[in-house]
Length: 453
Image (cartoon, rainbow, N blue to C red; front, side):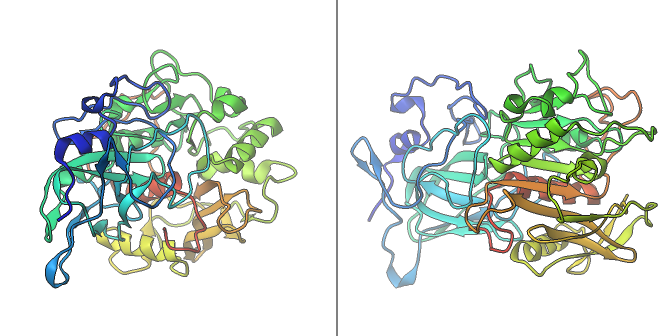
């Protein structure tokens, strides 16, 4: 019978001090301490993925797949991957769950392509289903067995106290959620321009530990820049410091540009140099998360950065909620539709009522993929595309999301975090949709036409 050799092997795989590491705190994106917390998780070590597949060992200790079992039985680990959200966390699909075959490598600082299936080398691996559940087969039996949960640069490393051979072990919920803080694991390095009409910073403060949202000079994983929305004390730097500085922008894994329309009708257009920075950023692996007016540069820039991709049509707001459909013609859309039923947003597969919908986009053309659309009026409420837009299948690098509805307005003169008054409440319908898209956009990149690897 093959077993992991207890704590010594588990700590080696997770890079812990007991194996001779210096236990130093890393300084690049996603870094946290390497020591295990009381709940069995290990702090972020921020990182690049290694080659997939194969088995290996450390210090002469063999690392093998699960033991041979009689009667067709298997050694399995099962559970449900959950969002980091502290209050009523939702299940998450398309998250890789695996037993690492060696040390889990640190993410390299700055933006890069993070393609699906390119996690660190693993012994056994699976991907969570639309309801977040997974069954990992051929798990090594033993004590303190290392398990990794990963979606792009979201990554949590945990230790399962005991895995019994030839039976199923349930992974408890406290070990199966993605990290809420750097103490629990790796979190993408994010930048957010505050928006007057869409205060997404308050949603992120519900999903993550609010302490992870700071000014760019802080140590949080989400850096806030002043747009038309909330400020902070001391004052935040202007958003032009983000989109106007290519090197600074490329230091982030994802950049959020929520709707920044104001009561003024004369918001200045983004300069061409800023638009170029955003396009270049997405082409080398950056993720752009745009809501309504936060993506107006897609329409206003001449010549357009993505010609022929989006048919814009600015009209008065439609009814709210707006009866809409989920596009299930592609694999990820089907998973999304199933997930909406699981979390109670949809009562019927493929149908959703969108609050605060906008009439801004009529249609999109490939390689853009619509996710949510309405028939009366004809609008697209959600679409994505991978970048570069000319990339062949398997060569996608970055990702752009455009959401055509608002989540939460930031009152005029708002100050973060005081204006986020519902961080201790469950997510509402629109927030759940954005939550899903957050992890889809910041997860691994591949063609939307393929099931997640």
